[in-house]
Image (cartoon, rainbow, N blue to C red; front, side):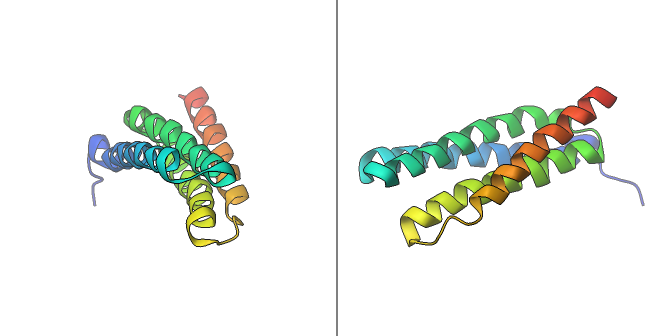
Length: 122
């Protein structure tokens, strides 16, 4: 069975990055207008994290020509951002403990390191 072209294999990463960035803008607006104090700070941190990683995903998806690169971006940056930011948002909006934030942060760090290794190899 042949694999789909590289463009199709990485398009979902670019689309996910764009959606993260869009959610980050909306979250930042919500934080600015509907939250205060510690809640506002946590939501703004989640928004900054999601925006930065969303833009990075959208920009770097085209360079994800290997399995390692796609795993670094998908499992590292995307999943890490969702866990980190999602945990902070769930803490503020639902009162859940932000237990997944550290795992999300570690996934993001690992994703960046794996992507750097992939780029050094190619």
